[in-house]
Image (tube, rainbow, N blue to C red):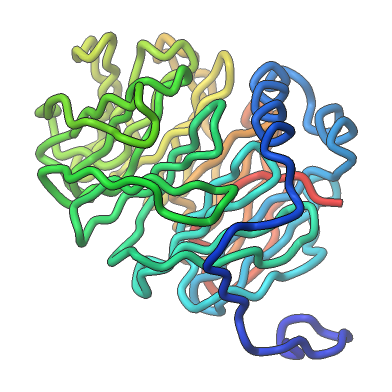
Length: 344
């Protein structure tokens, strides 16, 4: 990729397609790493990175340029770009070692190896994959497919689909409870209904019911305690806080659509049309607001770091765990989504 990897030799333009089992990873170690990750959320990214033998990195999808940008979070600088198929949009970290990339317009999900910094596999069998929720202890991820109106269970280790569940609408944003027992998904970008699924049998989610939110919903995210869910709006300057499946209160918010990311004791709510990210306490009270480039819709909090890419400006904003902007870097023509992983 001479146009992207300046000063380096050109790589093959053919993308790797793997249909079978991925070799070279011990399944027991994979599951044990999940438990280690779960108890390490309170530690700084550098501390956890040292345990994995890696560096905290932001993976950012450049959906107009068919690659994922690799940003060193400490230095806030681009260190690599990983070639993918066309149109990488959403991206989600699987415990810091694998990144799941949804290519919505092309019906493909890519798996990136964060340790080796390369494309690991491509999985077909989707119509319009949207967003991903990661199981806390098993190698399963739940990918919403809005065209097929399904929640698809993907084994991130074997790179294969292991289950599908129909939902009554075009599933998009999705969140899984911290115990892995319950999944919520918004049935549209301005959703009149939310679907609730029982995921106690991880490979066989079951639709339990639908919920009518107090406005047309956009994003859904479980709070760290597993009992609360924050639901943002696709049409209003409000978000709703649910408790045990019931609405408890609404909060004022920035321009819709808003997106949410949680730390252990804080919530970050981004509003791309306003160019803001607000830090809240878990009770909903507002702590501060920071200015970001317009189009900074998505926000990610993981391993003590916060990143927000801009779809309009092609930037990535790096914030500290208190919501203060550390750096803003231009990385691509458009930056759709980001996640945090650990590289070599």
